[in-house]
Length: 477
Image 1 (cartoon, rainbow, N blue to C red):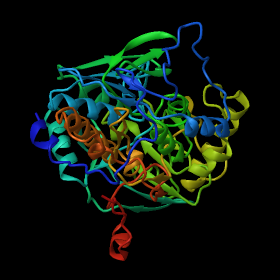
Image 2: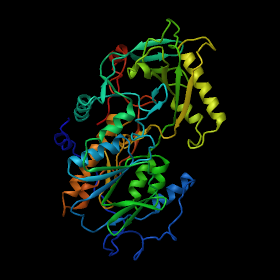
Image 3: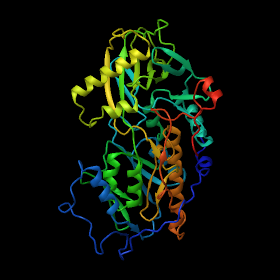
Image 4: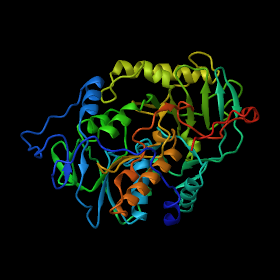
């Protein structure tokens, strides 16, 4: 079991720029917003959801709202509401517990937690696919300590299978074994579901889609379509994209809303396909790798054999492959992911399978027909820009943000962000009487473009040739 207390204090987040809220305290006993004497809206007067609002309209509303400022003392046993059960939100809850702080994690997942730590299991065979995050590397000692603990519990293991670059036409270049690559033993979602299994101070609520944040009397009131979901001393936004923007646009947190709106995200199609026989290759009877970054193909950026990667016992059973599109192909074929037209499904599926065929160097029409396919669009897949700060925290509104996009685009960045925000909140809770400005972080940082593969960043990963050329990417700390 990893020693959480030693790890939790090792990540210190210092305020970047002194900041004062533009609003004034209106004399309310708890929270203050735009108008003096403002009452909590009743069910009759509460505004309707703004789903379908244009981006320009959302921006205008986000930037024009007034800053909420809590003035009441914190309770003796504060409770944090964490909206989003991806790995960053889960790690934030884990490290809050290590500091003695209670939390509730709200997640929309029907099948489990994890967000982009997604694994789909199809019975009765069963077929198993990691359909978002594929693997991860370790570059930071704090993350390494966590991973060591996961390995001791049998949650993750090293991925020793061959991984490399596949160039259009069938040219494959393997990567060197270093850095080590890791996968979740039973699939990424099962790692996410296990992270909080030994906690005592964390409550998980799912499936639950928090649709409104209301500050009232020094407390955040969370609700799902008008149904109360609890009262919290502080809140964490651990997801992103249009849903997070809608949630924040009338929250009374304009600076946090502004930073969230600056985030730009790619779209990626995930095609899950099962084949009865091993995939053929241009120069051999079977594909010589378990995972490959694809180069020179418009529709595909990554392919991986889940059956081999997850060490699934094979006795003539199907081979489960995950194919991920390029960001450009995702953007070109993006549609509302809640209602994907059947014509789009057919077009994208055909285009990606043609891309796989071309990448493997096979003649047109020679790729075997899959016995099972499923197509999914990750409409808010990976960040393409970043403020380069571990977390964002507004001490006046007692609200923060964590997520991989604050540092990069990989599992390690998400974990470090969750740790950073947990420490920032715990330090704030445990420093009564301290000037709140000292705890403000990330509210004014400018964004910079984010480099990496279409499916994320993997520091140090590459072929021997690339290593010699010094082209390995290093995660900015």
